[in-house]
Structures are given as structure tokens and as C-alpha cells.
Length: 113
Length: 109
Image (cartoon, rainbow over all chains, first blue to last red; front, top):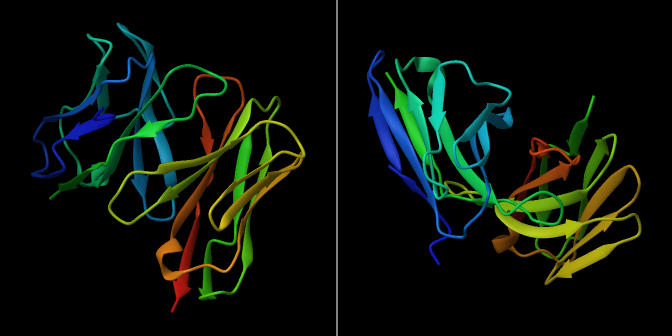
């Protein structure tokens, strides 16, 4: 099993450009999450999904959009990148509530110049 | 408000010097407490799940314990390869965890 796979691993964008980060999981997990991690700020939830076709906002959703058209994929979009979106982005998934912990991807390091 | 606080923010130990990391939490209904290890440039890696006060879990040099208000991650005779950031998270019974900001551990040879 690959677990949670994120693509790309690194990306440099110019201010105003758009891009999509892809997260794919092969564990048949219901819940999927997008976090950003910044020094001293910990993990902050951007958006999450509790099932195919459903999404919800987290703590810091502004400037991002998401889609979950297929159960195994969760896409994070930046429509018009800003330097404040320079961060490391992590995708995570889990089977359901309760006992099940998160499985994280290896991250995408995004720099907006 | 649900909250998770980890201390200390950073910890430097000599190899073999045992210590503990703290995770204190305030949640209305704890469904589980999780410990993760994160190495530089990588995603967090699951270590332990704890569910009820008094529970303990062990893995090699690590032991996690849980009370009604906090959890400890005890590191016995650490080695340089234990150097990492350790994250604590709680499941308050909603769809998403609440994470602490982590403890950066450095073990010196």
C-alpha cells in the first residue's frame, strides 16, 4: 500500500498564479484533510472532507478551494497565489471517527514569490 | 474552547538522559489522544493512541501515559535517532483533531 501520496513535492509559484495540489489515498478512508504547517504555528486545518462529494472549511480556508469528486482523491486549489501561502502542505486521511488515527502524506513545499 | 498545549517547545538531551514531554488538553469529550513523530521534511508518523485515564502504551524507548488532563511521552535513555518533533493531538469527537504545536527534541551524542 502506498498510503497517502501527495503531488507535487515541491513547487515555486509567482504571485497571482494558480495551482492544484493532489492527494491520493489507497486505504479506502472516508475522511480526508488538508493542513498547512508554518514555523511556530503548528498544523492548521484548511479544509476537510467526510466523504465523497462533501467538503467543509477548517481554521484557515481563505484563498483555497477543494474538491472530492472521488473517494480516494482530495484536491487543494490556490486560485491566485499570495506570498502568505508559502508553507508546507500536508494531506491526511482516516477511516472514521474514534479509534482511527490520521495517516499523513509526505508534504508539498510551496513557495510563492 | 477545546485546546491542546505542549511543553516544552524545545528540549535538548544528552544521549542516555531520560526525560518527559507534556501534552495538556482541554476538551469537552475526549475520544482519543494521539502522539506523532515528525522528522524534518516529512509528514507526521503515528506513534500511539490513548483512550482512557491510566492507559499506557510503549514502543522501544518511548512510553505514553494519559491522565484526565494531560499526557506524557516518556523517553528512556534516548539516542540521537530519537531527535524529531513530537506532536500531540486530541479527538474531541468531531470530524477533526486538535493538534498541539509540538516539542522539538534534540538528542546529542
